[in-house]
Length: 255
Image 1 (tube, one colour):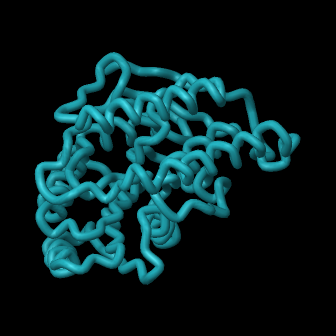
Image 2 (tube, helix red, strand yellow):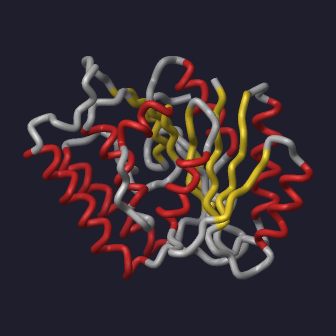
């Protein structure tokens, strides 16, 4: 199985080279078949120059530019239109996601799961330097979604997740242009009956640059996605559920 690592970036000149180099080294050490696809989302700094250097340095790394309009969700969607693997993992460009967890995702896919969702808030997970105001808002949002959809997963809003190609194709079309895509993808996968595993992951706050997530702007967008998918779940009468659906299970695995 070939795994595509999709990394959306905007003005990440200070950290993207280190982030990609660490991922490439870890996946080579794990003897994985992979590619790294970085999506440059309208950066105004020297990010694209750094990406050109990376694509020259590593044969497994390439990048594409996402033209205007820009947005995190649009950048990820650009990557999902251009990746070449059998599955795709969405990884942040700021170095907050641990390359070791990508390897664990890959193992779960090879066990037969169709999606792998990491959680930063279960036994075995590790979180470093999470800003307290963002942590409080994160937990409130995730508990709301968990209660609303009767889920076992408690970290839906985290972008760092992995999907087989057939899942991604089954979730189209996408309608989220911003960070709310991080909620749209996993909720659709769960609602539509794809089999997923939940594993503990590590997360470290960025050391360089500024977070692109604007909390004040995202509240209504997250709510829109949640309500939209709640209507699909309750009113669509299964029209969007995979046609070959079998009984699925979720699992929480500690390492």
